[in-house]
Image (cartoon, rainbow, N blue to C red; front, side, top):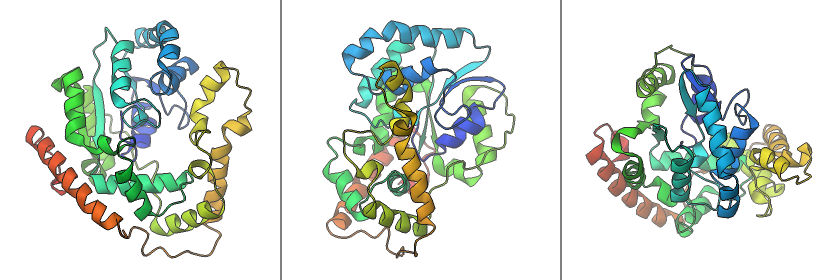
Length: 326
């Protein structure tokens, strides 16, 4: 289930898709957005995390048949992976998504895998991903937005104790498996193979694993932020058009929306162009890219206090919480 920026792409494309004892439904088969088939892509990219209730109900029977068909043909452990299930860029809250997961996978023994990352490091890495997607604001403004709009954004998803309790209450303690980004980072190939093979009860095949999608460097962030401010795109454009629109390619086809591939992948193309420009413009000041200015510096103190409380509560149930979380 995620989180993003926690080896998600590496797990999907290098481990799940390549392990001989896993029948992998996606995402990340052949590229970073494809599933084993378009029907599964419709289930995960539309019904689970975006569709309004009435649309979801109309397609529920079809969705259950899609999952049943895949699992019934599986000779091994069936695995699905999508970090936006825990971290949705949608109007649905997490509890709605979890309820739909329970409904769609009713009758199966399901286990949930999550990778936590210390909250400040997570916020920094996610900021870099936002900038990659066209976000035009400074890190300081970003921190202010996270705090100021925490009634509607992903703030509560960084309360790891709350998330752990929510999942275990719904699915059971033994079905929720938590790993830590910082542990994996020490030796991704050895530790991901070792720990996930144990979690999934499969053989350790010692698959080659590396960081498939590394974060941007501070010098790159500074240049890309400058480009985003000069040439709005993606997250810097109007709010009605999704900045992850290429993930909607199947539902747009089903709804006969008439969008061309060029329109659906417009933000992907503009992102690639911006990444090229990033390396061609004069180097922008990068020394203070993560400096917090008033009122964000005071806000960050409040964030840190909240995280320490949450992580301390988590550590009471999980003795292997890394020390830097506390």
